[in-house]
Length: 342
Image (cartoon, rainbow, N blue to C red; front, side, top):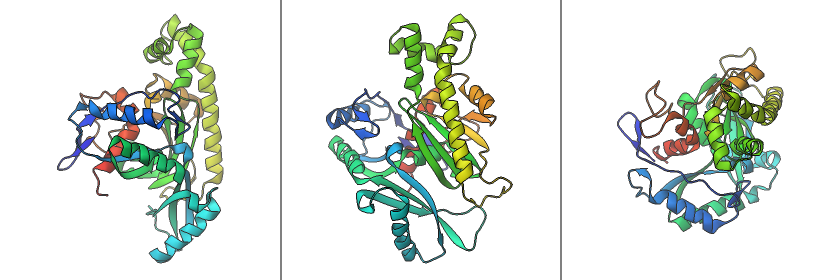
């Protein structure tokens, strides 16, 4: 939870509890009772101030959302709403009666006179209703529900605007999300199952240890081959990292061959990704930025999830180290939304 100050914000409360496998699968809540218990425990004993507010800004699973950018002729706002509903029928692989549909006009960086760009986001009603029921059972009142990628961008893109396309890779515990952000909006999102757990499991198999010890080895060595044990950790991570690299190349190729004109100031190659930003807990893996940068031939850096909260160049606070902050990327983006006017 963030608190608004005069010209900035500060961290008031935070906490996290690992969700055991089987409670949420592919974004769907399988065991609502256990999910409610975990959320209650997380709120009950936070680090920092006691949480008294019942209002919540929460994220919806990226893999279940449909995100499109469409172009419409310039028209009145009430006409846009009707046009968006019609376009949604043609761009979303579900009936509009089966989804919650949201949209917004994308302000251009370079003005264009003949049309308007619209971001459309749709999430299945059944899934959203699951999350709302669980949150209400906890005793919380949902004020905003948004897909994870929107919160991630708010957390790591300075000013929520860029003049060149960025690829943000959110390396989570159970999956990895790919987010292309350009101008002032999302352009493309996708996800795959290669994740922090994939790396941990590979180490556990190679060293014949449990997940806890494998996680320790992963955090200790990462991709830095400083001794024999570190070399062994590196070797057993290479297959998964090679797979991840190839997947990133495929997404880059797909985006750059399908991207539309994005009205950016730099027009030489408007669809070319200028930089890759890593966030999520997996981004703290030592050496992963250098490894990906070398193999992808694109600048790669770890994110600063405080870029829109702390004054630059700060990227951590005493209560939360930089590596820990990477795990809270989505939460910090949601918290930023929470201190804005609804």
